[in-house]
Image 1 (cartoon, one colour):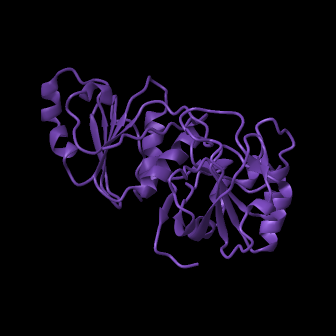
Image 2 (cartoon, helix red, strand yellow):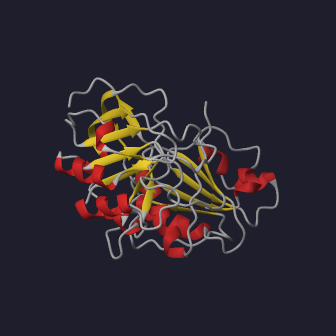
Image 3 (cartoon, helix red, strand yellow):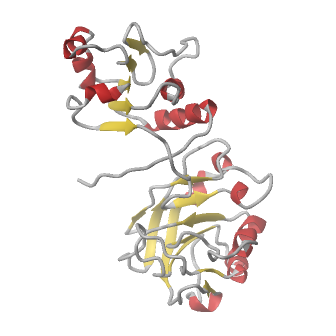
Length: 297
């Protein structure tokens, strides 16, 4: 089993609620969510958004159950909101029936879950602090990242990030831009993923990765391409300040995927699944990019 860690930093209670709502919408089976953080860190705000994502009716006002220890709310999946701040003994857990909820059929969100250390088992989601850019790892850029007053990520059409794609490999020198001459003469899909090999270890940042020529973006647009992905942190070089490739994507309303891990992926046609989260007002979103073989263009 591989452990994955994703950190997202929010800067307001509203943003924390939006994050909770996005995660709530993705939940389709029983889940334990462990919330760890100091007073005022946004644990209850997250649960308020989570309740919205789980379709808890609006007439239920979500507050921290500091004295009742557990509140229950109806929704698409039942939401159990526990606050263990005043928990004094392990026996209190049994008195309030928390052990049954840990293995129940709803979603259990536990504030001050550090008091549960050693009791959580099975699938659980631990949320402590949210400290990351949304441009971490494989991610989808929104036009608002490089265009003033341009659309944010929640408004991007999902069909751009789902469907047939072609993976191509190019021989790109470190710190150079890929041009049209390095690509196959025929581009027969709407989504193109370019493997440069210039960012070999996604866990170690190197600044001399390759990028894209602005003219290449124009040429791909003329050939009907609506999404371009690359295996480097950016479609522009690290020292670029005017971001010319990004600006051509903006001019043509094309989608960008950056930070893809394409090592070991043979060239060919695949089905791409790389949906961004509907993070309202954000300029990008992490994606879990998946390629499925056996697909025709």
